[in-house]
Structure formats: C-alpha cells, structure tokens
Length: 205
Ligand code: ADP
Ligand code: MG
Image 1 (cartoon, rainbow, N blue to C red):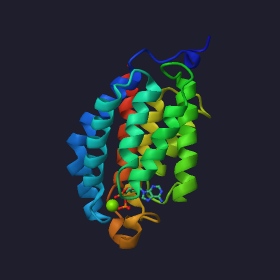
Image 2: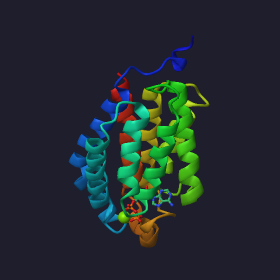
Image 3: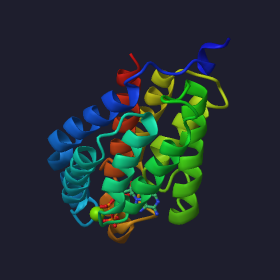
Image 4: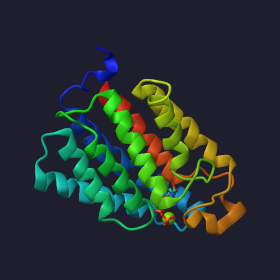
C-alpha cells in the first residue's frame, strides 16, 4: 500500500488542533499588526476570538476523532466576524469531512484541502495573486495533490506563497481598500494559512 493511503497516526487531529490553539493565541498580535498596516486591523482580534471559541467547543464536545476535532475548529471560526472567520470556518468544515476513518490518510487530507480551497474561492472569489489566504493554500494543494508531495512539501509551498504576498497589492478583502499601501506587507491570512499547514506537517511527525 502507498504511504499516502495509510492513515496518519491516532491523535493527529488532536495534536494539530491543540498546536493551532497555542500558536494562534501566541501570534494573534503579530498577525493583527499586519492587518493594521494593510487592512482594517481586526484580524488579530478575530483570531483570538475564533480560538477562544475553539477551546470552548473542545471542552463541550470532548472530541475523539479527527472529524470531531476539526469540527470544533470550524465552529470556532464560523462564530467569528471579519471575512476570515467564515472563510476559515468553511475551510475547516471541508477538512472535517475528508476523513473516512478516525484519522485521514495524506491523500484524504489532500482532497480535504482541495475541497477547502474550492469553497474559499467559491465564496471569496479570490484567485492566486490577489493577496489572500488563497496565495498560500493553492500552492499547498498543488504540492499535495498534483505533485503527490508530502505534508512538509505542502507546508513549504504554502510558506513560499505567503511570502510572495509582500510584493503585491491586495485585490480582495479590506486590504484592497488601501491599494498601494498594502505593498511591502505580508498578507496576514496567507501567513495564517501557511502556519496551519506547517502545524499539520509538525503534528504528522
Ligand atoms: P477583513 O478583510 O474583512 O477585515 P479579516 O481581517 O478577518 O477580514 O481577514 C483578513 C484576511 O482574510 C486577509 O489577510 C485575507 O487573507 C483573507 N481574505 C479577505 N478577503 C478574502 C477573499 N475574498 N478571499 C479569500 N481570502 C480573503
Ligand atoms: Mg481585517
């Protein structure tokens, strides 16, 4: 059997979720600052409140499967404002749906990320190059699905995509209202998406 068809080890969903809670609570101010420089400044607050809700969902649901853990993350974001709240919420909802067993295989996770990208683009209408989370997610999906890469390859592609957002001006979201002022500033949603992928690669070991 291909390694991509073997489920990630038990506890992947829990490790990933807990790592996201810790990392985003720690990084919310830094990411919020990027949104202050090229946007309306609410991203850090949106992240803090989303992950506060994720922790409440975890406490209430006591999840035991990957789908249940990722559903807690999705619900946390869906209850949050900004453009990023609903978009990340729908993205994580697609991920929650991808696993057949208790934990997904790498191939299933790739399908979940592709479905998440499709949903984000259906609602947000952003293409690669519009300086959004899509600039990190689309190359990660390519690395994991079309090129059959590893989760670490996907995380590296997302990181490169996020770094590329510094050179362009925003075409979507509140940052698009500031035009040229967004040039030179990383897109916070793309940086956040790259973190999500890096933490997945770490959690997969
Ligand atoms: P808002 O732009 O409404 O203030 P947030 O500050 O919560 O939303 O989130 C900003 C992030 O959301 C941006 O950095 C960008 O990555 C992402 N984003 C905004 N609009 C879109 C969109 N239409 N499609 C995809 N991502 C978007
Ligand atoms: Mg904002």
